[in-house]
Image 1 (tube, helix red, strand yellow):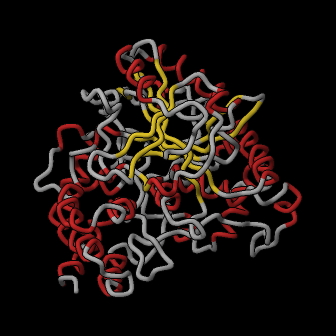
Image 2 (cartoon, rainbow, N blue to C red; image 1 turned 135 degrees about the horizontal axis):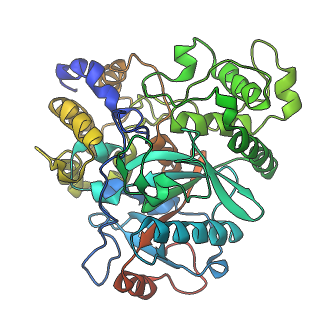
Length: 447
């Protein structure tokens, strides 16, 4: 049984819902991320990946065509749990300047699209490995801070994101990915790692998604899809609409058939676009007030934690990797997710403020993790889950981490697949190490 203090999570635990990149004054921005990916000093490791930033090895099932791209592909087990890790595609860049980063990311967009590693409808999650060993908040988020929607055009991968502006939308070559000075005068240091996940949709839906994404990248949704800074206000809740209605409305805005405003944060926009991919232009134009029947979300908006075995929560990604560790190690590993007091040194100003704000309340969520790690079922911890979810008024949501958490579930349950983790390195020694550690020729799934 969990302690009564969970009932006090209330407003402060809201910070655990989404963590999108945004303008510099947003509470969970990426401003100040001034370090490149911290590669390992060990000759046998490219990254010192903790288990709470990893996925269970058992979910890495999607074959990738390694022969069609020139980069090294490494299965990197986590430091603590051998059956969790990341399938890393290591990309050498010629330095750390924005120009060098732009060139490397454009090359990635060409090569990985040609190889089918990046496809229409994929989600590229901004990943900050350097946030390992900091504080509970970024650990629970699995180091993810932003969600980009992938689409392809002319054999090249592009991204379209909220904010729908020139600092984000492009060929993974805009300021969010390469770094530089933002429109507000702050410094963005770019994105040096991406988690690639793939919603399970049909080829027909991927083609339709490409059409919707190309349109919105061109018209930027006609100025009516501005960035939503309030991550606790999913559009269906704030507008008192169903998700079928909000997805339909987004489609109409893209088509120029509606002038209503629909502000969305990054992962909310990506989630809506995937749901819209089951619809044609004609479906949306013909839709009535209740929304188009074709709307088909890949997964439902999620609570923070699940209260039965059919559900998983936004905050439970590290728990899924923890559960593939030997039972005798799990209690000790929970402590690593929730360090006390933690080290805020590598956090951006926004993440630091949120981490410090929620720090006094982390023991409640830690207690939930301890109960589950000790063998308690979701049904046995349901009352504690109810208290945690009540902290966000039981309004389900879809954070960037939601896509990765969905990709970590067991076969038969998951609706999203983990594809790979793209890591950009600038040192020759790291590129050489990646070649040494690369999986054997002819294999793409870790053995």
